[in-house]
Image 1 (spheres, rainbow, N blue to C red):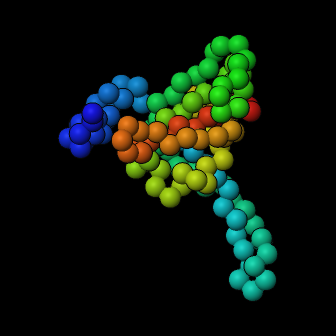
Image 2: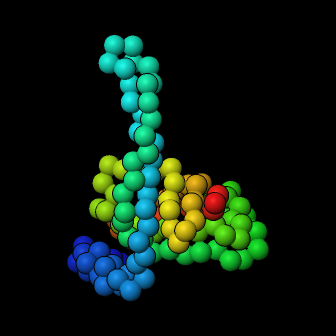
Length: 126
């Protein structure tokens, strides 16, 4: 059975385990600007932030996983610490990595005992 001390140790060790696997990525989302009176959308702008993630590129043939997402060659998983994302996590629409643009297909919070990271599934679009 896991104790609270075990969970603390695993959380503290995560950086040490991942440090050599981190790669820089840029996450982005579209921020809408609204008219103060009519509340209609009057503009949009892309907001980008560079963070680090453990990236796993999918190189296998197409296969379906249990959550219903069919991986394709070129897709990637981006494992990001929740603390690095802040409020931006739920808004992310695209990830830029290694000269490619990835559209977010889905995300899952991960962690043993407590959620401390999120895994994004990205489909390469350019």
